[in-house]
Structure formats: C-alpha cells, structure tokens
Length: 277
DNA sequence: CCTATCACCTGCAGGC
DNA sequence: TGCCTGCAGGTGATAG
Image (cartoon, rainbow, N blue to C red; front, side):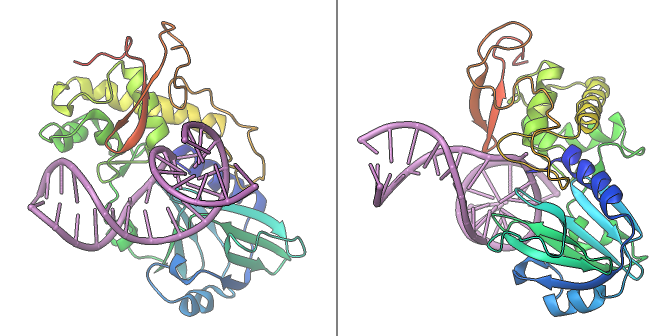
C-alpha cells in the first residue's frame, strides 16, 4: 500500500491525532507481526511508556518512546486507525491494538499480514539494526546526492525501474511513483540504468524529489481502498499521470498508456513520450 | 557480489 | 452461482 508519501501522511496524522499518549497496554493477535522479539516481550516492554515522537525513514514509520523505539513497516496493506476503546473493530484483520491511558486506541490493520514491527532500545543506531539492513538513504536525506546515485547505480545490470525500486540505494519510492518518475523523466522504465550518463543523475534525483514532494503535499495517493489513519478514503487524491491508467490517454500526447510487467511489477508508461534510449 | 525467483498472506475482479 | 487464475502500492530469503 504505502510508499514514502503515504507513510509521511500517516506519520503526520498520528502526530496530530495521538499527540503524546501513554501506553496502558498492548495486544498482539498475530504473533509474526513482531519481527525481532516475542509478542510477550513486546507488550511488556511498551507498557507505561509514552510516545514522544513520530519519525520516518523511507517507508518505515518510527515511534520514539521513553526507553524504546518501535519501527513499523506497513508493506502492502498495513493501516492505522485511531479510535475510542468502545468502538467496534475488524477482528479478522486487526493484528495489534495499543490502548492509551486516555481511552483512545491505536489499531494496526493489515489484510495480508505482510507488515512488521521491530522493537529496539532507544539510543541505538537505527540504521545498524536489522529493520534497516537493506535500507539506503531516504529520498529527502540531505546526504543523498546525484554523485551517490551515480556511484551506486551506473555499473549495475538493471532497468531504470528496478533502480528506482531498490530500497538499498534510495529509500521510499514504490511501484506507483517509480512509474510517475519515469514519465516525468521521459524514459521508458525498461531502459538499462547504464544508458544514463553521470549528468543525468541530477535530473533523476530532482524528479524523484519533485514527484514524492508533490505527493506528500497532496497527502499521498489512493487507488483502490487505501485509507489513511484519519479514516478518510480518497479525500487526498493525487492525480497520477500514467500509473493505473492503462488504455487512457497520455496527459501530454494523448497516446494510450501501455501496461506491461517490468521487474515483476505492473508498469505503466506512454510509448510515445517515454524514450527507449 | 550480483540478479532472478520464490515465499509470505488475503481478497477481489474477470473469464468460463 | 461457483471455480479458477491472475493480480495487488513490498521485501526478505534463497538459488544460481
């Protein structure tokens, strides 16, 4: 479900809706949700701690507590709901509930159970932990430069789309925005990354940041049924130019958008505007 | 080290 | 209606 802009929207929403509550208790209904400790250890550790801060790196959401840091990756369908304790919830797909002292609950909902939680001691170097072992620099990290992207990518035998999706280099771009970035660059998603010259990486980074920044401003993208933790569905709709627009006219030239599989992912592009080399 | 493929899960749309 | 297949905004493990 969520790429960087959606996770950022969730982060901001939780910051407003929850502020800094104190955890009364935690219930885990799907044990494998917790990646690096047992549910019992997880629940006992969190009890009594306050949520002090909400952060994000790439697609990871980070809750900073008094003594621990809770890292949450929503993968395909993870969602948070902020609801009062007495409100009914979807028992089948709710896998974790955080109950706060003020009677509010934070409920983690995940149809496909792909999402994961990681618990760390506060103060450890997060980037050195298991959750982040394959996580590169966030799209908006100030130390992310065109030079770095060039060094990491230019010798690899992968397509442009694969490069954009590779979280170990630049973290945060997913399948939707990879297509949108390829469109704004005017490249076919399937071109070899080796076709890019060193100078092209400046534009690559600029367009990645422009697309992701615009999506964050719009509050993320909703296709199908993604709902932010506000519980709104479709209020924030970013206008996508190519993704999920098979057979619809290209916004630039009117040519029908093509859908094909690239790097095992459904990929949309304009066969006329996006050059093969 | 690099790349490709499978595994993890469930629900839904479309074809027959 | 029911069954089957393919597909879904992700990523880790594993096989070459």
